[in-house]
Amino acid sequence: MAVGLMANVRPCLAADVDVEIELPEDSPEISRHLYGHFIEHLGGVIYDGIWVGADSKIENVGGIRKRFVEDMKRIGAPNFRWPGGCFADGYHWRDGIGSRAKRPRTYNYWQAEMPKGLDHTEINQFGIHEFVQLCRLTGAEPYLAANMASGSPKEFHDWVLYCNAPAGTVTEAKERAANGDEKPFGVRWWGVGNESWGCGGDMTPQEYATLYRRFVTQFPAYQPKPFLVAVGPRGHSKDLDLGWTNGFWAAMGDGHRSRVDGLSVHYYSDFRNTPERVASFDASGWYDVIQKGFGTEEVIEQHWAAMGKYDREHRTKFVIDEWGVWYKPGEEITPAYLLSQPVTLRDAVHTAVTFDIFNRHADKIAMANVAQTINCIHSLFLAQGDRYTRTPPYYVFEMYRNHMGARLAPIHHEPADLKVRSREGTITMPGLSGSASVKGKTLSVTLTNPSLDSALVVNVALPVQVSITEARGTVLTHSEMTARNTFENPDNVKPKPHAVTVAGRRAQVSVPQHAIVSLELQIA
Ligand code: AHR
Image (cartoon, rainbow, N blue to C red; front, side):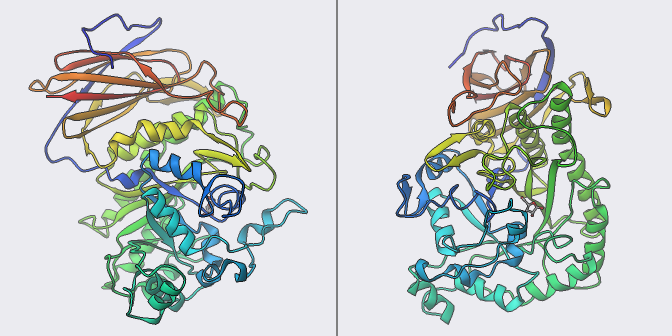
């Protein structure tokens, strides 16, 4: 706890930034689901990452890695999206129920990408019951992606019945009970396909719209009322893929009555085709990645404007169900962990910038899921056998936890833009990223300084009638921009308490270079 008079917190070479925070009564709630997760049957995400098996020597709860469960509870994980990704459009849910010993071995979409000599046959040990068990253990809600490419509306509807029909009603409910779960799973979030413009069926938006209607028209009506998510754009395309959003809505527009509660957006900061390396990089590599994080805002704004032409009341919200920094292959944790990559402080700063954007657009976004939580693209954990570490972005989720379910507090500041060298020449980006929210008497403020060279002194001012009675600061940074946590050195990058001074309605805090600072202010 650090409360006191404004003290000398000015680090060398620091510039001042004035931040004004408003506290209007009618601002939107930041859904806790903006801090959600995506897990897929891909490389080391499910097997060895989450599922170690009930007979494993690794500490587990009914087969699920115990440390994973504990760490997800610690950050209040709101949901898991499963079973894919591309895998979802080849997955048949019945393969994953019944006695584990008798489940079939099936083809996994990612097999073709496995290095020579390594197998990726799907062993189906982690099916819907194991997935719901993970959700129950962590307190997260399940979000299921339906198979539209090789499945049928009937297979989809049967899955809905199996998950949600009350005991004693249809045959699927009886079957569920026989497999150990009498109580319905109560799945609310349903993704109708995944990337149907690519691995999910290679469709045009018009073809997809037709199929979407067939999949949802006779959706079985059980509790909870479903939140139906249609496939949306590939936001990281050069043209932001506005053609998909326009094409889909135009095709849905002619008097059709099928509901669309969410439009999924995938936005990867995509470095797969660049020389960018993950674990070692220079200043231009740092700024390139952070710049793409700031790019999230344009994707949201442009697609929101496009949707508004068809859905004037904006009934449909975004579900950004895949986001993260995706580097080129070559630095995997182990060759079998496809798409896994080291995760550094740079990815943590990217996470913070992204979350600030999600918070500030809380009125437009119903859910957002990081891709993917463990042993994959933008992971919060790396795990292999009994070795395990949290990565720097894990701590960003922890530091932003107060924003979940809080009311947005609009924030205004005019930091000088940063002019920096990237691989593509000189670029500019905001010199400070921030967002704020309020829950009861707690005002939470998150501030990120992307600069590698200069610290900032941030002067926070609240409305005149408000005063700060207590303050707590936390900082996440490291002397090295490439710092990361490894199995051997898991505590290399960790949050630390950080001094903040207060006087009346004002607080002052330094935000060191390449750092994330969170403030928890008690207000009266
Ligand atoms: O997250 C990895 C893959 O990225 C997913 O399976 C797919 O939906 C996306 O292209």
